[in-house]
Length: 223
Image (cartoon, rainbow, N blue to C red; front, side, top):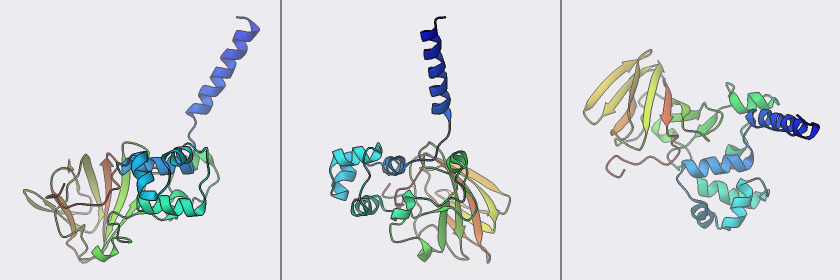
């Protein structure tokens, strides 16, 4: 092997190693992941945010940094606070920031677009480092009497959960089931379903969804 070929092979090996390393998502990555999860095209987001498609394309590719005013428009169109794009993390290690979410640094998910779902007695947290993938892990927390909404809901994909604490009434199209701490469940998400805290203590559920769901909930009759 000549020196030129050896140098090329060595450079390719280094580039492959760099490409394989985990790195925390950039601002552009976060915007693109949320847009895609919500099922929005670039044109659709541009129309809702009142910005040009070309500008948003540059932002998503980290070729342009949006002003605060532009970022406020983008976040409003995507239904999140600006802070969603800058999740806090106790570590400066890129590997940890890309692959770990520490307790106390979880992002809050709002499925209602009504400044939170506290009025339902429900709080949802993202446990996965990113939503830019096929699977998301979340934690649902329900106060006594709390629930996921008055109506059964349905959406695409599959979900499976594990009751960490409390008593869950899992309402499905064909009936209702009561689950206690240590019980688990799973079903196709197009099945009309509803979560209710049936006990007197706080209910906590570890939930996995695929694909990632961030869009507002809709009654099963509208899905």
